[in-house]
Image (cartoon, rainbow, N blue to C red; front, side, top):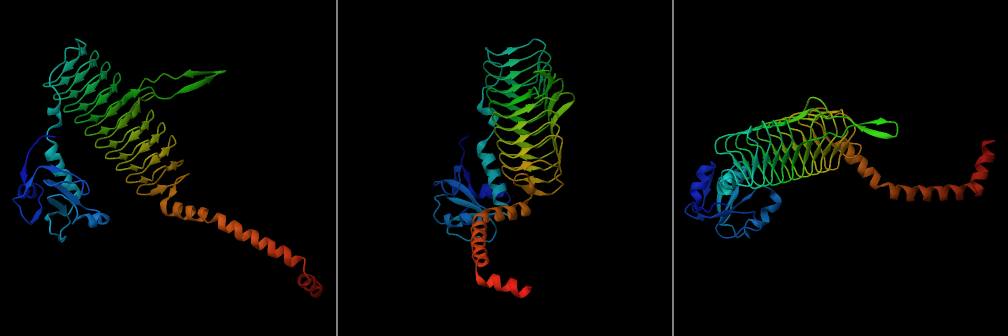
Length: 355
């Protein structure tokens, strides 16, 4: 982080907050409410952390309007978003952390085109016909294949791979080990062997997308695998060939999306959710962690469980399943009572009366 000190009143003004307390306090860093030290600013958004308000060592706290404390406070209607603004301020320009220019060990094809102030770090490779936008940064050992388009202000961390003919938009962040454009998983049975289906499509990653470490986006068999603008993909996510991920969607760690599935806008997939192929997930839908989605989900629906169902129904089913051992025990007791009654005179007399 860039070392800089701000007066608390400066930060309050920058985030549009209301000062409550001493605005002349020096703020030198940011931290969570439990680990913060003197000189740090933190935030309180979740009520379960309210007990830490008076015990935190932070010099100031961003909180909802109306919160009272002996600590210096900055009131803001969205404390978490305001905290992110402050965090971004202290983080500074991430590109400035890395050397600029072309490293002597980088291999760049003569027919590649690099934009103004683009940086290619040690042991990177840039293929023929590739175009890299201005201020783009390849940190270390990044592989860029032939005829790739990379936009402006991108940041590729070590061991990223972008294969031939793929397209990356502006301000895209690829974390270590991310692979864009690997072959889709396609084979046809030919007698006793599996014959590979050529994967001749490509991947398009639009502006402001972030893709986590060791995540893979497969190229289309034909056509395009597309990750639309603003989407955020966590670590160890697998997106198969011909998938469409709509704008501003969130995919948590270890999600798997099978081929030709379409995600709408603002879709949220919880960790380890798995989706079969050739289905549609509607706009604003959510799938809970480890949800197994076997059918299309309509817009706005919250689903969970396996197979994934509407969340409230899934919760009821889980509750029923958890009560099965007790129900089984009660059923066995009833069977024993019925069996005992069947051997007694009461049953015999009732049968005789019925005659």
